Figure: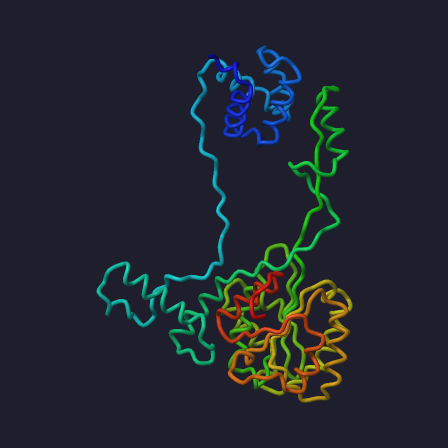
Amino acid sequence: MTALDDPVRVFVGLGRALDSAGVPAGPDRVAEAVRAAVALDPTRRADLYWAGRVTFCANPGDLRKYDAIFDALVTGDLPRLQPRTQHLVRAVPITLAVPDPDGVEDELDGTEDSVLQAAASRVETLRHKDVTTLGAAERALLDRALAALSLPGESRPSRRRRPSPHPGAVDPGRTVRALLRSGGEPVRPRWRRRSVRPRPVVLLVDVSGSMSGYADVLLRFAHAATRRRGARTEVFTLGTRLTRVTREMATPDPDRAMAAVAAAVPDWSGGTRLGVLLREFLDRWGQRGAARGAVVVILSDGWERDDPALLGAQMRRLSLLARRVVWCNPRKARPGFAPLAAGLAAALPHVDDFVAGHSLEALEQLAMIVAGKKVGGA
């Protein structure tokens, strides 16, 4: 039995070898090659050659590789295949095995497993604790975890189209250019699909006195959000005035970014004028594009000094502009909590998701909600 006695085996081996050599040869192309060979005479070497050539070769650079691999395959001298490169998807980048700032590891028995288990246990405990109850060492761990937090955001379809290797809508321009390059020889159609791009995110962080215990952590969460690639993220602070801190958040180092924000915001730990400031945001930035189609996240306890009806009216305006409105209240997780604050009660009818933000776990869930994923209990 020769290699040519089984055309399916020939094209499966040919596809694997070509793919290893850098010529795209997925299962769909192998199936097309088999169908082409069956339509010809699969017992003839010339028919197998041309069935594979017109199926696998997409440009002149593929022909030399194809000829060499086809000859090696039919003579039984197939070169060793190179392993396919594995692309690892980065998981949620929370640092688990981190050094203990207090040097607690020195008191353990010194084994590596004990140190790793102790570090993982501390971070797991930290994930569920309210950030206002953390000590200095735990707060340092939390800051490092927030610095590594990933907030990819939600995607939306774009009007632009991009080439695709999978069958779908025919790309007429690329198909005609391929025909011209081949001198009229039939070529496979080129496909295209609609591309996607990240949806903009706007974060409004309450820095008033009632939020003083959470403001720094929430701003570090906002800093992590601004590191999204190719996506527009705007950050504002709310107190007695509205301050845009997107430029200050552009610094890669979280500590330097927090220092820049502290210098730019003049109303730390003051009162709260949510309705007036939300109206200012909508008039100056929201209706001009910042909030249109965006995911808007308000991080506040909802304590309002002015008329709550004004806040309700501005929240309605915001809900009509934004894709989704998320309200994050760190006090939501406290026992016996009820949304009785006048501002919060006026705003909630226009909110899509009402979540807590008191701990690392709650902020991770908030990141998933911003990305458009469903989270239990949200």
